[in-house]
Every structure is written in C-alpha cells, then in structure tokens.
Length: 402
Ligand SMILES: Nc1ccn([C@@H]2O[C@H](COP(=O)(O)OP(=O)(O)OP(=O)(O)O)[C@@H](O)[C@H]2O)c(=O)n1
Ligand SMILES: [Mg+2]
Image (cartoon, rainbow, N blue to C red):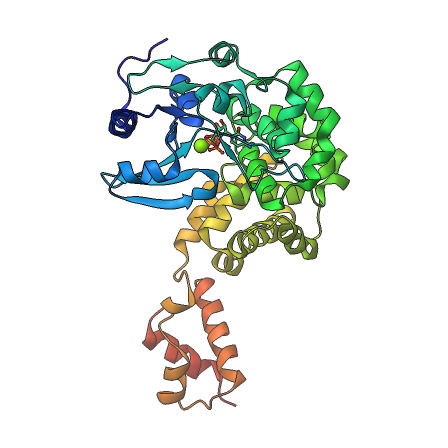
C-alpha cells in the first residue's frame, strides 16, 4: 500500500530518509506517526528508524544532539525541525520488566519491528509513502484492534508499561483489545507494579483524556491494572461509577479532580494522593483549588470573595466537574458575577499598605492587613468603588484608626 500526497510534516522529513539512503543505509518512518497518518489523527512526533549506527547518523547530518545515544537515538535538526533517528534495534537483556538499559542493534527493519508493542505501532513507511506491514497492522487499524506483535506475554515481559499503553490506546483511539492480548494483560497485570510511577501516570492521563475514556477505563479496571497503581487500588467500586458519566474530562486538572471527587478523598488526602502519583506542584495546587470550590458549590452559591479567590479558570473547571457529576449549574450567571467583580486580584486594589501608612498615618502592623481585607471585601460586594478617593473616605468614615 502506498500513501499518495504525504502531509507536509512527512514531506519535510523525507530528505532525512533520503540523506541516509544516499549514504547506503535503510531508513523509514516508524511508530505512532505512521499509525496516526493512516487514521487521520493529528501527528505528534516523527520517528525515524535506520540501519545506520548512531555515529553514522551523526556523520550524515550537520546538526545533531545525542539524546539517547546508548539506546541508539540521535536527534537530527533540519530546518528548525527535530527528528528522533534511531538505529534498528532489539531489546535483549530485560531486567525487572522495565525497558532495558542495553539494546542490541540489528541490521534489519524486520528485527526492529518485531520488538515493538502492537501491530498498529509496528508499521513503517518509506520516503515515497510505501507502507511496510509485516504483522497485519493495516488490517488491525482498519478493524480498530489493538493486538500485540507476536507473543503478547513476551511483549509485556519486555516492558510491562505496554499493558497500560494497551488501555490508553483503547481510550485514545476508541479501539478494542484483541483477545490474546487481553488475556495476557490479565495474566501479567502484576508486572505493572515494577514500572516507575511517572511512566504509569503519563499513560493513565492519556487514557483519562481519550475519546474512548469509558472503554479504556473499564479495561483498566477489569484487567486488574487498577490493582497495581498507587492509592486507587482501594477504590474500585467508587471508580466504577465513572463508567456512567457522560462527560469527558477536558484537561489534566479536571481529570485528577474527577478521580479525587469520585473516590471522595477528603481535602487533606488530595495532596498526598497527587504526590504519590508524582504530579507537579502546579497540578497539585490547581486540583486542590478545584476540589475545594467544588465542595463549596455543592452546598451553596459561592460568595463574591470565593469567586475572586479561586479565579475564573478554577471556576470554569469546577463548573465542568459539577456537570460531570450531574449537578445543574448556571454557568452564565456565575461567570457574569465573576466578570462584574470590580477587582480580580489584590494588585488591582487602588490602595495598598504603603499609602495607608504614608498618607493616612497608620502604623505598620497586622491592622494594615485587616484594613486592606475589609476594603477589598467592600469592593467585592459592590459597596465601594475601587478608587483612592472613595477608599480614603470609606476608611475615614469607617473609623478604622485605633
Ligand atoms: N513501551 C513501548 C514504547 C514504544 N514502543 C514503540 O515505539 C514507538 C514510539 O513510541 P511512543 O512515542 O512512546 O508511542 P507512540 O506509539 O508514538 O504514541 P504517541 O502518539 O503517544 O507518541 C511506538 O509506536 C512503538 O512502536 C514500544 O514498542 N514499546
Ligand atoms: Mg510517539
């Protein structure tokens, strides 16, 4: 099969393949980009596999970076684009079911494709768009099937993360997992515990944001992968409720908030939960804010101060989360209320501590903070305009002096 009219991304990369070929090497596009091209999905990164050794790749191109030279990967920079170019390889010595430290370079594309995870990821394409399909990947793409290359048990022993990859592709692509592949995951699910949490998290998140979330998540639970992940292994019945939800989480923060809320984790357990999953501080704080506001809004309308304190992004994410859990929320009204706030942050306040001390004769100390808070509160509740004259007057009349 040949792909006519390659998209620009591939056209731009074709000279890389040609340069390697001109030096007597084989070179192909491989992996996710070929798969995604064939099913019209947006293409992430273009990976290239070649018979050239890393040193030979480096000699072929002017600008290269040794990204993972011990694994045979050299990054080639051409026309400001970067391409990962990897020597045909097979992974031989497996320790602890993680990807090996050592790889063995091989001279044929076939050997390289044989060690890849799924048939849909084991397709290659040459510079003219000709597809190399040695394991039935095209058929599986057409039938929307995720199937291990060769013996599934072997593939999962080589890298146990592949079991997570199976369910994340199921979610992202809305595909089904082939029977033997599925049975091998169920049989070997315990191997997942050997894999670094960060790697599991990346796959879990991709699963969480996929179009076929419910399908992938159901497999994640039913193939017992859930049993191997931090904290959540205890919450199977709670998490199963997510299978009945009709909204897809739109981003990382909503995804983790959705998980935390469905497990009914108390607020003080959310940070430790996110830390266990090695999330960044940024994600941690954003998720905690969403869940806090969610708890508020489940009981009552948020106050103006709450809208101000949490801000628009958190508000919108919380509204989305509430809708996921079947709560009716008047988003327009809440957003209008937010937009009508006279100030959106402390910096916008027309007065500050310095003015209070210099112009109004207050003494430095905790009273300053209290005055600013009260002024802010009056402005947030539309009882006071945010201009210096009005605020000074408010303070004079209000008898704030000790
Ligand atoms: N554990 C893994 C990881 C990757 N691969 C192979 O390496 C390719 C590139 O890996 P990666 O970029 O991680 O995955 P993609 O399939 O490209 O998916 P994505 O679109 O998410 O990048 C895969 O297609 C697959 O052929 C593999 O066999 N086993
Ligand atoms: Mg990729």
